[in-house]
View (cartoon, rainbow, N blue to C red):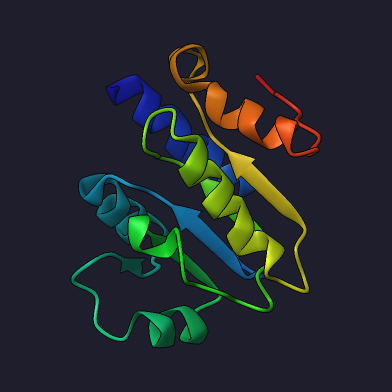
Length: 138
């Protein structure tokens, strides 16, 4: 995963627009902290105090599974998923739902390695079944 992690961070840098209200989802605490340090943004996880305040005070945040449900950000523009719970279709739909609660929704990017697409691609197909258009870029 070392090369996969580095490639994901490069792609994240390419996709991230610091002017847009963005949530970067990352399940792995270690990687989430690294994203926080690398991009100088807060990483919100189970031990974070006042999570909603942290989200409201920052244009861009990295967030663990605590952001999967029960978080509505009216001006959320983008979601970028870097790390996720394997092939969980439920998690995928929940995360997409975060964007659907927004009045400013623009895009949802999922960064996957080729191996992850093979192993966990059903996450993506869950969105397609709900009528979303899927574009895969290499």
